[in-house]
Each structure stands twice: as C-alpha cells, then as structure tokens.
Image (cartoon, rainbow, N blue to C red; front, side):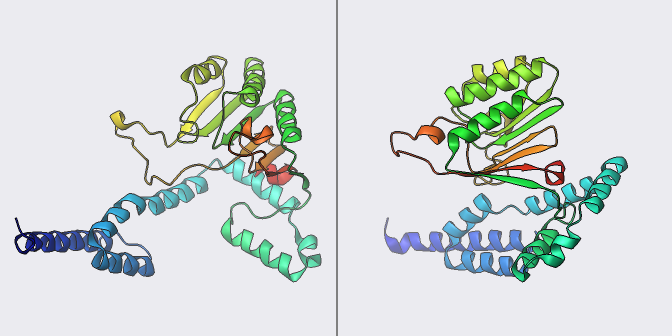
Length: 276
C-alpha cells in the first residue's frame, strides 16, 4: 500500500470529520465567537479538533445552568422572602458609598455575577494563611459544636489522621441528630476506601460523589472530563462558613514526599454571607 493509494481515504475522512463537526456546531447554538473558533479548528486540524470538541465542549452545560436558574426562581416563596429580608437588612449601601472606586467596581461585578446572592454587610472574616493545623482544628471544633446541620464540599478527602478526625466529628454529630452532608469529587477521592464511606453512611452522614465515574452504568466523565469540583467549603448551622484552598488530608498539614509544606489560604466567615 502506497501513500498515493491512502491519501484519498484520509482526505475523505478529514472532510467527513469537518462536516460532522461543523454540522454539530451549527445545530447546537452557542456564542458566535466560540462557533467560529471551533469551525476554524475543524478545518485546520480535523481529527484533533473534532476529538477535542466532543471531549471538552458540551452545550448541555449551558442548558443545565439555565434550568438551574429557573429552578432557583421556583424555590419555596418563603425562602425567597427570607433571603430578600436578609439582603435588605444587610445591604451594603453605606459601605458602598464609603468604599473606594476600585472596591465599588468589585461590589458591582459581584452583584452582576450573582444577582440572586448580592453582596451583604455585617459579616466578619478571619484569615487563615499558612495556618493549616489551626484551620484543621477549627473545622473539627465547628463540626462538633453544630446544632442543626453541617454541609461539607471538598475536592480531596483522605482517610488519614486529618480525614479520620473530621469523619469522627461528622459521625458523632450525625448520631446526635444533626444533619451532616458531605459532597466530594469522585476523581479527587478515587482512592478513598469504600469501608470509609460505608462507615460514614451507617452513622447517618449523607455522602455524595460529584460526577461519579461509573462506566458500567454509562457514567464515564459527566459532561466534561475536566468538570471537577475543586471547591473546599464548610457551612455549619448557616452561621459559620469556611472557604479557601485547603483540602482534607495530612499532606496539607505537614507536607508529603514530594514537597515539604503546602501553603494554603482559607477564610472563616460569619454573618449573612454564610446563610446565602
């Protein structure tokens, strides 16, 4: 088989891939600039471009976002009434007027990005910068002091000393009747032992994986392989929130074989922003 006999088939394959890619883009509306960029990629790199498109681009994400917005608007009217009252009571009107022009731009931007959760005043913020052990102990104490609910959302949750301490606190409060929920990323926690999850669930902790990879059930990567949940958030009783970059694992406290220390920044927040 010579090159002269192969290239017509390759050319035909390129044309088919270009046609499939362009057809799919045109019949699945998105931003004009994105459509044009993908079409040019198909023409320049048919095989690679088509593969990347179907791997990384999924217009259904935008549809899901729109459905989520509609769902949030249909939430319990009593909840929206309470949120509106919270916003009116804690509107940063005076703070906005006294803020610098740069800060005013950030406040306006935050309002446009999240109109359902506008900025509020009367919050307190404590900074944990390069204070991993202090933050770990604060998280554990906050969970143990919970009276109504604990909501945790993390990318990585290890079954080591740090993870076991948090898990023990969760199970203790769950057994006491406190609603405890844990949302973790399936890829970030891929090596988390099943027995660890089972013990949490048997104690009453609600454990859910974000976009689980279950090929035999038709769930491989979710809409995109790079759509992972990298959030690190803890909300306790709607009054105290912890958010930042520190996951749950010993390496975030004392380093690992490949690095001596891990520098993270975390915030402890109290006030109406937590309830939002």
